[in-house]
Image (tube, rainbow, N blue to C red; front, side, top):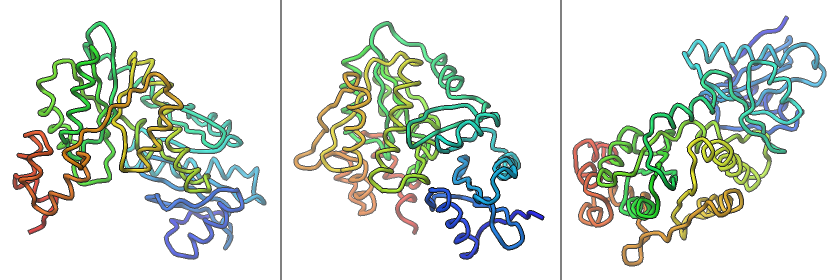
Length: 332
């Protein structure tokens, strides 16, 4: 008789790792829940959730053909449904793709190492088309910028203003999923206030399809370098395949990256995929410092508000000086 187990103990997680290894998959720590199916004392199937992403589904080779993949999948989907999660994603390999396509999933993107699927509720095309229809754009060129703005700096504003003067429309996709200090609503508010003088700038949520848990699979990619380049490839390919045609985007603007190797690699990957649609702008510098959000966060921790004032638009400076802004960095 099969029994479901929430895998939390070391021995249970060791069973999960062993089963993944047997299926040429690697364990990924970025999970919110892992479940296993046991036949007596032997784990015969496993699967995990990372928020609304289903991943690391594996079945014991001696128990193939016993409908265990369907069993683990429906169990994970019922957990999501119980939490009220309507939209979810699934990562798998090429050899398992067709199985999941029969389970009310549709293909978002695939290459030789990644297959990204989504359930058919509010699909990528439906979601992006709805956002596009919310915009009233001018005739002429449309440029896009993807930004985190954690928080908004004069460096961000410099890039946006350059883009605004060179194009008829600018769409900023503000990254929704944020692992850092400033919540999305605050970043959105500061960005709106900082760009209100630019009448051709539109701000949209990035959706789960840009720089999110959903576009960063990890579990069947072995090397860190292979893994990170696969993430980048997936993320930019989705932008190229869906965002560019749906929003009629002519150019994507980025700042060059002299400091951060990962962001620099992301820019290089964009060059390969977007080619002449990518426009790279020299980053704003203040004397020797590149004006970056990480520098502002460091200065905020050090309470160096006089220097922050030189590097940020007024709304960001005022927020960081406010009680709410100080509370993000100092628990007094």
